[in-house]
Length: 410
Image 1 (cartoon, rainbow, N blue to C red):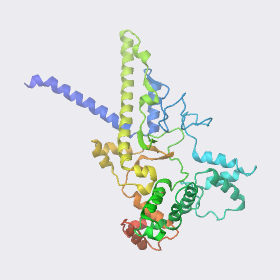
Image 2 (cartoon, rainbow, N blue to C red):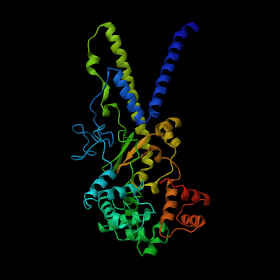
Image 3 (cartoon, rainbow, N blue to C red):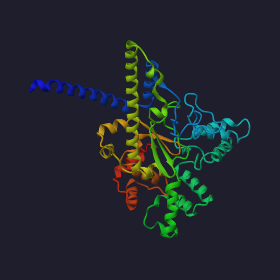
Image 4 (cartoon, rainbow, N blue to C red):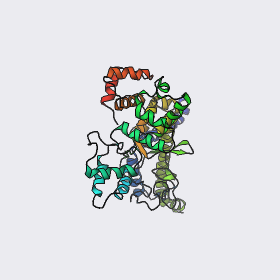
């Protein structure tokens, strides 16, 4: 009996060892950054004649279908794009800078550059910039505000939100939107807010819907991807009001086998050489496909939970852990952690963030603290902030308020 089962047992152990090796390789490629994956593919294409990089089908930045090798969404008509990637989008700040330079008097274009350089990572002016601006910069500042999204180059978050609200009301939004943002931002969510502003419940809800969905704390954010030649790992698109998650696989990127070499009739020795290279190429394509699929599945679950955050910003962030996503997908928690670590996601509106931003347990509360202290009526103490937040249903310890107030990452 023992002799009969020996070969079967040996074969089973051999299969287990092979699967373990493949699984280990898959975990390694999942944990790799996009730059590392690109470098690996470049090296393998150079070393393996059976592996080719052809024309990509979809844009690496926004996942749109390419037309003539260019992305109609990112490139635009006649837009300059990065040499390393025909679909690389122009930087939003660079567009603002160039457009604003065209509005100022000849010889003062450098003032526009100075204003844009002053903007923080959300597109706001730091609090230590003089108000009003020095005469030399006043025209440049006005030009930047004219061409940039509303709220850009405002002095602080509250001023930015007010500018955005004012533009929305001018475009037909309920006038109550401006009243809420300008005069009652710290009281939003309070049970007596409707009475304070003299609005009906339906009227207040209509205005609050605009506040929640149309205002942003970052009117001109800085893209945070690794560089102009490093696209995101995952793309989230708004397609007909529905958020769609894409992670591009080898077919999308034009990575595959040289079919002519694969089908070429060869003698035994040459065929052995060719088949070894084909097997190596197929294995890499398989790993890249599995990486893309795992990235997409993990991100899709996170986006399903965080749709409010994706659309409206940090105030709508919901608690989410990697273990919860792993449980929903039937994956090990360490696999989800590998996917998230170092990965970058592109969101609608050209926001590029670490994938880890979709996870966490305190973002909405942190945002409430920062907004409260940035309002026109900030609390005098952290204890007072606790009481005002509690009235809105946000219960935090005083030391937590202190932590969020002094360490806001944005």
